[in-house]
Amino acid sequence: MSTRKFPTLLLAALLATTVALTGCTSTASSTSKAGTSTTTPNKATAAAKSADRDANWSEGTGTQYGGTAKAAAPKPAAKPVAAKPAAKPAQVTTDGDMNWGTMNFPTGNATTSAVSVRKGVPREVILNSPFEYMITVTNLTDMSLDNVIVSDQADAGFRVTGSAPQGQGGPDGYTWNLGTMGPNETRTIRVNGTATREGTISSCATVEYSSALCATIPVVQPKLSITKSGPAEVLKCEDIVYKIEVRNSGSGSVQNVRIKDELPAGLTTKDGKRTVDMAVGTLAPGQSRAFNVTAQANKAGSFSNKATASGSNNLTATSNTVTTVVRQPKLTITKTCEAREFIGRSADFTITVKNTGDGVARDTVIEDVVPSGARFVSASDGGRLTGNRVVWNAGTLQPNASKTVSVVMTRATSGTLRNTASARAFCADAVTDSCETVFAGIPAILLEVIDVEDPIEVGDTETYVITATNQGSAPDTNIAMTITLESNWKYVSSTGATVGTISGNTLTFAPLKSLAAKQKAEWRVIVRAVSEGDTRFKVTMNTDELKRPVEETEATNVYK
Image (cartoon, rainbow, N blue to C red; front, side):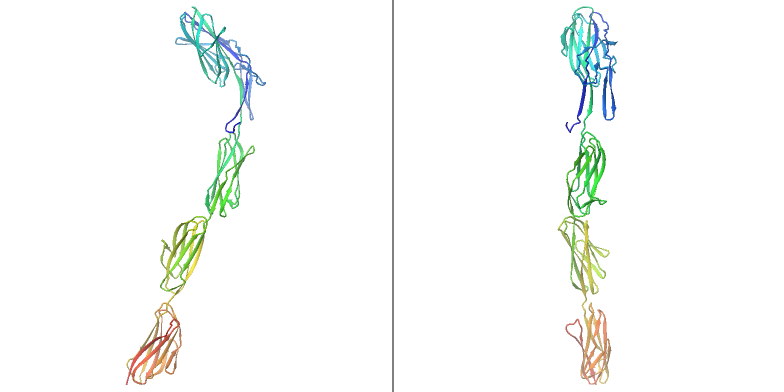
């Protein structure tokens, strides 16, 4: 039995009786007369078929197309016997110069008979002149007839000279062994001869055949096969869609088909299961059904597995192995900047993002927040300022690839600029990094000393105004003023940002704790001129930021 075909077991019971049927036709050798033929059909009853559950039953009773069916095991066909003449006469028609007689055997009715025989002879022939007549035999059934033999016996007034196909002559006339005739097949016999006497000559044709009662039992072989396909590679956050197809490639139906797929550790379905169990139902021969199974990975790695199918009659099938590699991109970010910068100057912030994973980092985006108090100046690599964020579209980073960008910012006041950058990509966790730059100012104290009156007369007082102005960008601290008086001056009083103390000819003001950028501090000193001359008023200033003292001298002319 081949698994590639639909084997059929043929149970054949050859009916025991072979039938011979006879029809006669006459031909006038000098005048035209209608030929007649008669036959008596065998009694026949067609086999009845009935269905009982899963069995097909064939029953034969009486005579089947001239053959008798028996309930016992098949026996060899009986020797053909001639049938009695049919009760109904042959049907005779005229077609041109030919007379045709038709007879259906064994019942006389074409719808219930097995064989139809037609015989066509000339309406008349000339003595001793050659002529031809024809015999056609048709199998009226939908099954083959075996051992079909046609015999034709003519009287002494006819001499056969040949036939097609070649027949075999004998004391009882000519016979033609046609063998097996297929369903509805027709054979034609052409007989050539001459009439040897004047008057009427006749010939009678008989047909013999064997029929069989047959029953067929389909022998089927259902066969399950299953295939599984899936992506060769995915990222960890992507769905893994497996396609499972089960097919019945056999010749019979398979009931109760199920598909089972045990997912490997690390993979689950959308609802968190590791076992996929699906009912398929019945698969007809050649039918297939496909299903999609969506899985997710909770880790990177290589995952391999197979699916199985089962069905009725203990049928099983195992699919091919499908291997899917799950990869995951992993980003790192590093941000560097200058530790210290002066107010008003720009600071560079450099950001490097690297993919250290084994998966491609698609749609990588780098962002840097411009903090409060800072001002965006510029960005490299097409970075755009959107709101308070600088954004770079870095595209795709292959494993071990990196991208470096930079942003320039400044600050108008002193303080710490803490800047944070972040990076994200498809299927990668976001990462951040920060760095700080301290923006410091530069103090710059301008010391000015002026005399209010110049010149003055001996005995008058002079007022000196001392002004400290921080022209820088940062405060200065502990601003201290010291005044040295020449001998022609006598100290009177002092006021100002701090208190002054006189000692001998030196006036010292207490240090000013702090002087903010762009701010001023003032002191006033009143002295009296005690002698004439070109005098000097000298001020010395020290601060925390100054590495050496600043001196300022004002000249005043005293006269008498």
